[in-house]
Length: 240
Ligand code: 6PG
Image (cartoon, rainbow, N blue to C red; front, top):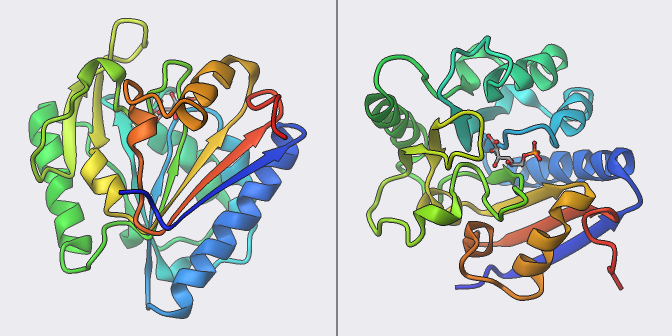
């Protein structure tokens, strides 16, 4: 089922892309808070959103009304250089006053399967009684068309009600053990924003946006209301 709207924004470079994304995401949060008390935001991992998170930390957002979740995590300690939590702590959380009780990082201790079950409980506790999961989901795109830790090799995804799964990334990725929110969790969200930068993503972007290639997990992201792609010209050179 397609979302009610698809919006594609292309910007000259990574810096202007990050500023535009910060404006759109902070505006999206404020829109959500106009008609509900709190907003649930799932954060993307990887390196692309780093500048966005720095800018969001300085943005006009009532952070005391926002709950932060993660769309995926590498199964490493939270102080590990490759941890998605660490990256957010160094950027958004270094500036924004988000109550610690509103920061819901994915556990990376014990067994991955058990950690996934614990995070599932966290999501069900905070989001289970709503008609949707997250209000906003931020996502990146791998050059192989993965998003979060939903990899092409894992398609077709299990058709169950799980919102979180422990997975193993293909060998080309440096951290094998991961936790990821599932397609179901993402697609029960109200809106999703892809943030994509760099020439290496061109092919994957074309396959998702132009060919709607169903062999790529990113193609399957269909939030309920709005799907926004924010790219730079390096990732989307032939934008009309
Ligand atoms: C992760 C991310 C992953 C990321 C893409 C793009 O934990 O790695 O969730 O899906 O968004 O791999 O990564 P870059 O932004 O570093 O290119």
